Length: 384
Ligand code: GMT
Image 1 (spheres, rainbow, N blue to C red):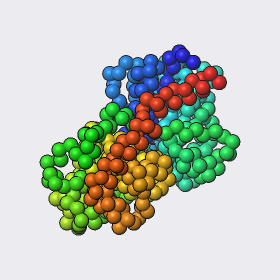
Image 2: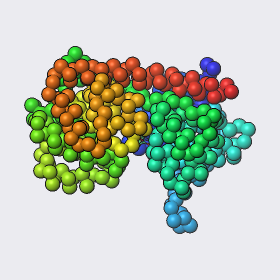
Image 3: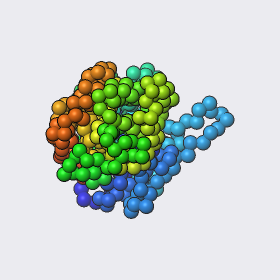
Image 4: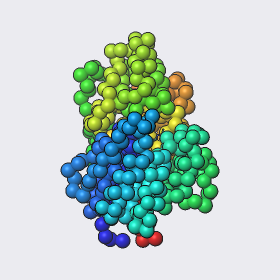
């Protein structure tokens, strides 16, 4: 199909990976000539509002004395119905089953024959964590099965969805990986990966820079990042940069004080220009307990920054152990620290792994190639 499509995108408009992928994919589709309507309660963080073919429709979730909690699902559904009829949407692309696919299903019922098709992209938390919660499970399962098509970013998440939500295995779920803009997320000095951008003011010039980027949820184990760094510092002069914010921040700050690392760890909080910060780092740490894909790790690889991460869930599909970094037991502080020291103490090993990390991102997860796969997926849904 060659005609431009009208696509409605719903996501959580926050700094999380699902919001980033939804936004970047929408902007990529707009650049390919499709009209893209973001339907969300706030402007997605990475959205360029002034891009041609991009529109934003706010979901107004108003407080009402009748409700204990404002019901997000209902205003979202109403906005979806409104945008679908006004803009003649061909497709709702919703990120997260609950409640976004649920709203899309309701909107479809309301719109009847003129309803757009529903593509649901699952991201992990909605299956591995929400999937366990009995109060969400029947609705999540129903909303997935009611979608016209379902995608996941990793083979791990496809299997987890079948298993945890008891989805029949003949119900198709396609793996369409997450992606990265390799022009934005690129190494500071491609010819010599050991040369990073000049350090932040807090770091000394001779120090190696370790970095972690996340939303500081317990699942990210940011305390483990600090413990690993504590061991690495005993062998190698180094500094740790923590980017992001979330519920574990004060617990982590407390640990940093207890370990006497206050001058060696800098908390940057939420940041928009993550690429520029990654270019100042030698190594990315991601000791998560759960990670269906690990977009933050992919962005690091794309900057030529090797990743030391947990051997869990979708991470081995992104990081090849011993090639682009190392995969370890998420709870073994010693093993992770050993791998970091090994990488940071040999320039030749570091160079080899850094070059491989960059090649991995460019060859397997480049934005244009994956956006083209999504575009083909959209077309196949519309022509069905
Ligand atoms: O990891 C989070 O807390 C955020 C979450 C989200 O919804 O944005 O991330 C999930 O989706 C990302 C994009 O597909 C993946 O890269 C993350 O691995 C995944 N997080 C988990 O599975 C815990």
